[in-house]
Image (tube, rainbow, N blue to C red; front, side, top):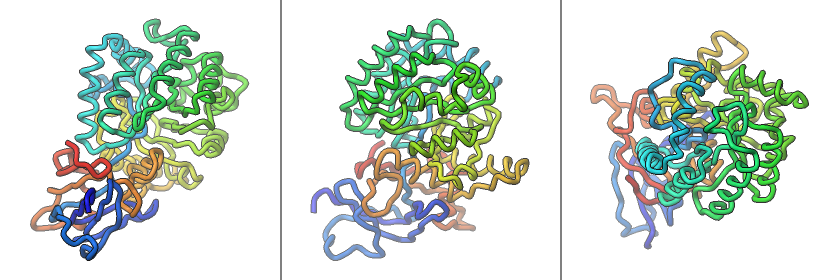
Length: 419
């Protein structure tokens, strides 16, 4: 009966997009890192296997962060007094320029990964910088930790500061070396990462499209993130009808995961193309409040069948906690619905689904505690009042609205407890 773990406590996960499953005083059996089943009592065939009791604790799936910027970690929670374009030029690009220094990159990425795990995120899609050595450090550190990840060496060859713009030929050759070196990784894999359309020439994007096909690798970028970006993209690519079409025409779609961060101002054609290639639109609620000035039409996109996830978008967002992004997703949907009644309010169950099961689906069978899913899980507690105890589902909701990393008692990655 080796490699079997049994855990007792309360259990909550997404049953469907709009319904949470709740088990009180249940037993979850984990075999070789995968959920074998949930039971009211331990089945006889597992007699003799020790049971770890979490008492009033609630077991939930670990979170998936589908959009963040690991190199911007030192800037979290500061320098948010500008909107996107000024914020990038004044603060963020100079910070990313420092990643030419491997010692600085090494320290930042250790801190980033430690904080991410502490806050319950076990799967991540992250931008690096243009720097080959530093981004190699990031992907190697995530691979060593066993974190499921997609990591991008950023590409940009125009409309940016000189120290972050590459020659097209250099950008493509360095990116190909990055793909050759890390495509065989088991957990942390490379993903093509044109920063966003205005910073990439058509020739660079076409070259990346050829690499996508050659190495069968996906793409992440910022899609219709701001009104400025949307307008600028159409000015620079007048033969395209929308932001998303720029990448399709370059041959970047259909070779692996497609992750479009923000997707705040999509046209009908943007939505059609993202759906055609089963892409994910990622809402980053804190970033919306801090630097972007626009709210994703989350409920509308869900109704249209778009796959949705949540992102911390550090450092436009101030925290790596995806649980708090779930709460903010609900809050922002209420504001959007107030001013635009055609946009419905997102329920907490929907936001939690985005943070766990739907976001996790990008990485395979993770993001739920159903039979057959990886036991990537958290145990949370310390959220009830003695005079007003919470149900397990209420505990999860309070955790997302008012909890912190201190409420996470245990973290599991494929059945192994990690700190």
